[in-house]
Image (tube, rainbow, N blue to C red; front, top):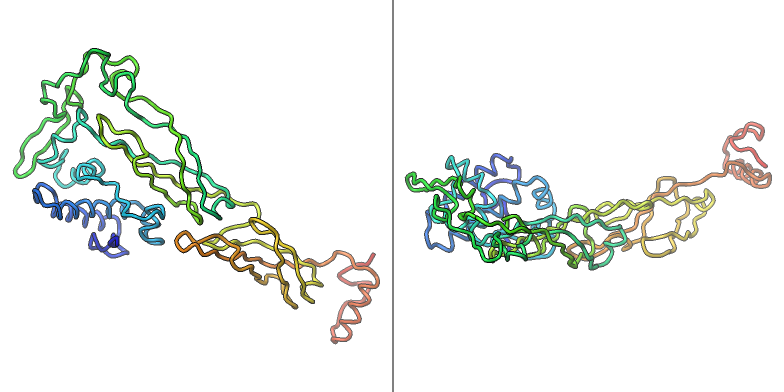
Length: 372
């Protein structure tokens, strides 16, 4: 069972951004790996706090979390949904937070040599916008998407050098990519100016990737889209982001759903809203009307004495709920149509009805309607 993110950070649901940031800083200090060497429980709490901050510090993610809970920020796919495989991922994601706390390029004494670019590193996360029609969300479906990623250069296998050559260890930083200065309990690090953080110097760069070790690649994958998704729903695909470098694990792909507007139906949560026009006689006497749903035609019963603006429903003809699968309703707002002209016999009958009910109506010559 996933813990509540507000509970993890020890803040209320009304806390502002500064309060959330302050709470995360406190926990990051408390459970920092350098203060708890070898303590797996502290490491998990460190990553747990980072995940909570990652969601609650983002206005859009926080809104989805407040509305749908963990399912709203994990794409309804279940699981913990944490993007942090180890504490190094936390430092990569929130280095600015630690910089705010310690006044520099802080990674922690135990971290300053393991995350250099000359060593393996995790690939970047990617975001893909998937547009769907309203009809597409009625049932679970599989969509094929195509996009470009940044992956290791095939010509040099990610070395960044021409064939027969290899990167050389930077003599300035000794291959760490950083110049480290000790300051009390913590180590302060700055990027090496010679190798620009790579930890290596390339004398003969690859002609394909120009020494970067990375090239663009085309990707095509299939995405399972659950029934009932709405605009803003995110589906997280583990390991489908950019490739890691030098054997590092790939990033994740976040597929964000956008549902196109429908020409006839509007959506309110799991319900579909539309209008229906009925003749004034059917509104008075009742009857049945054939109506279109998203998938077919059905019969809608019109009760006697239906007034303009009345609401009629077809139960279970809306959108499936993302979590329960139960479908909402198809809701019709009634518009009553009156004729512009009346036939002579029709006007005569209406006047008789008005007289029978004691209604004082306008004389025929000044009537609201003119007959044919």
